[in-house]
Image (tube, rainbow, N blue to C red; front, side):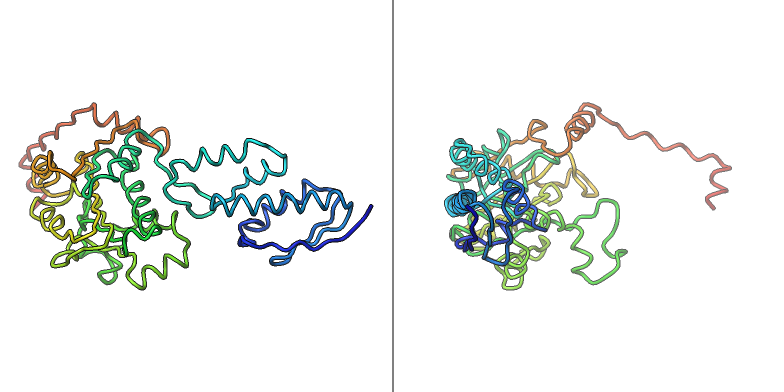
Amino acid sequence: MAGERTIIIEGIDPLVLYGVNNTRFDLISNHYPKLKIIARGNLVKAVGNEELINDLEAKLHAMIDFYIKFGYLSESNIKDILQDNPDSISKAEEDLADVLVYGNHGKLVKARTVNQRKLVEMYKSNDLLFAIGPAGSGKTYTAIALAVKALKNKEVKRIILTRPAVEAGERLGFLPGDMKEKLDPYLQPLYDALHDMIPPRKLEEFMEDGTVQIAPLAYMRGRTLGNAFVILDEAQNTTLSQLKMFLTRMGSNAKFIVTGDITQIDLPRKEDSGLVRAIDLLSGINDIAIIYFDTRDIIRHKLVKYIVNAFEQDDVKPTEPEKSTPANQNQIQ
């Protein structure tokens, strides 16, 4: 028996249900080839067999209920619901057990390795944490996810992300633009992580009203950082006095996370890095935790951990410069 019905979509942004460029809506339509389905805003019009329309309406409501319960809806969830997969709810509950942030485009941000999970666990009982380890191990990303979660849960009023503006082989003065344009390349990894976790418009609002602040380490001097989640990234490029200056900015109801990789020091003299010395000084103090990441935590391209291992195993010693011959000296002059 043929019929026609308009189904009202409530409790969910239609974009979440339909997907970008209607990719998710096409999944739903293709599941019901004998129905003519048209979506306009929060209205879905279905024409065809009454039983199929009833099934479609029930499935759409199941998707909305899923979203309301779990806070997200992925394409795989839609497929499970369309196919009456009874495990979809229990699987979602299992997936959500350790989710830190529901990121953009349905991305679930969670701790995925042993030491990432250790950072999350130690965060619960410590106000200052050090996360030390190689590139790609998720130190900063996990820390920022914890910060975004704390902000969303109203545990803090602002997020402050900072890095030392230390050049890897080039000077700021030679770079074009004003100070912000010169510093932004150093801060870009922090922007990238935030763009994964906070909707673009909301992030723009947060940046404008100061809820989220990203600044070089020098801008922290003289401030008291209270009711804030503060992350110092690339701390291996700070001197001991700079690190002391930063740590003593801690105000009431503040959480501090310091991340760094002691194998990637960009200071003119590597021995000037204060990170290792600071860890020695502060280890054993209550409410301070130190988590060491390693190559097992690297979750970038599979080759990255092999690259890191190769460089760690090769104790490269600088070759002595070739002595200039008189001919060379003449050429230099």
